[in-house]
Image (cartoon, rainbow, N blue to C red):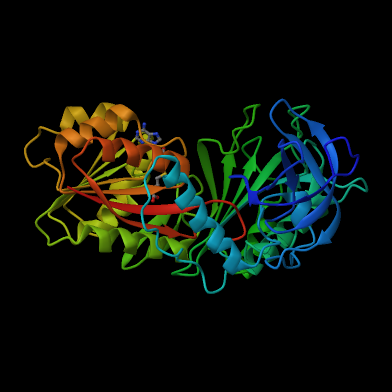
Length: 450
Ligand code: SAH
């Protein structure tokens, strides 16, 4: 029962933020046990001793946690994308809420956190499937994922987060490529044609887009592929040219093979055009839930100016536009703001403006412009959270409300503590939303009022 034991026996007490089991050895050293969940009692095979913690895997599950279930995907462990698949969904939601509370407590913010808004059916929610391609030892074509620390592709033809329709399309494309013996790209040599498959599905319209990411500009026998995909109802088929070495998946240039270069998706009453390169939320159903929380928190009367910082393709700004006097979006990627403007036009939204640049640099430049005074500021930063200078600027602007949409409870808590210490804002509501069932990702919306 000590760390000298070749197979220590431990009870898992928590999950790490990455969703791995965490236990403590008899001498107090933390031990990460992959695939284990809280309340599992396990016999552990130690794999690695680190400076701060040890890493192991389950050798024997002695007493399963009451929250444990059989992961329905046979590849769950190898794939690693669904870190929580062996945990009952209710327990996943509870864990996510606990994560938010624990992060807030770290900064002495003890606030009521609402129950996580989860999905009725937490499967098949991904609207985007992006897979690398490879050959099996027997020379067959497969699409799948790379095993841990390996360059060998593991075939995944029935992902439970992806849709059955996507699975059918993947199968069709693989059959086409194999029949035509069209070469697959090799990262090692930089030779071969087809690199990745991209499939996007619009929930609202049912439209499907397929793009083959290729190391070249032409796909041999493409008419055969077009015919096969048309028969499956695919609306947009293209090549996405990426001839660069390195690990950027998508290239800049798109070559249409069939139909328009985009499909139309709906969120609430709004339409969005999605191309192969557009940034878009992965879980359409929960995106509506998330944005509705933002709308509810904002309580707009139609007279407000709303800022959407880190706005991506402007979806939150556009969602709020019809309840506000004006919305302003700021986003670092120019192509995303281009999409945002197109989407505004598509929906006849005339009161939205989008700016390109770092929020921390753009906001100070535009905050004094006529009509820019913010009543509500929404921020939705990447995992590293908001720039501290930006938070200080927001405090200076002193909007009546700040709505913080976060994909990382730790940086959320840090930034809330900063805003709280500033003295101007009170944290009113904390509402997690489950955007990624079966994974350890935690999304939270937080309302601050002056
Ligand atoms: N609100 C969007 C998603 C935002 S994701 C939606 O709901 O769809 C975070 C966005 O922040 C990304 O689009 C990223 O490109 C952008 N970003 C990252 N750093 C930034 C910065 N310093 N200033 C502005 N935008 C930034």
